[in-house]
Image (cartoon, rainbow, N blue to C red; front, side):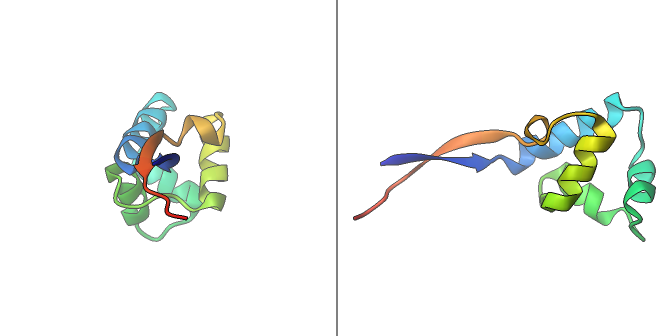
Length: 83
């Protein structure tokens, strides 16, 4: 068995909510920043059903004034690796 890092989508989503609230931004504010026609992508990020793309993570980090590592929640999962 080997341990591999994975992104916890649910906790990452909650982290995005917390960072957004701490920054004093609404979902509509983020929608406008990204130029999205609807807020659906942001809600998916926040609910942990989807992750922001790498370029969107870069923008989120800049908006929240944090590092990308401060947005993502990494956990370790056990994987069976066969030779």
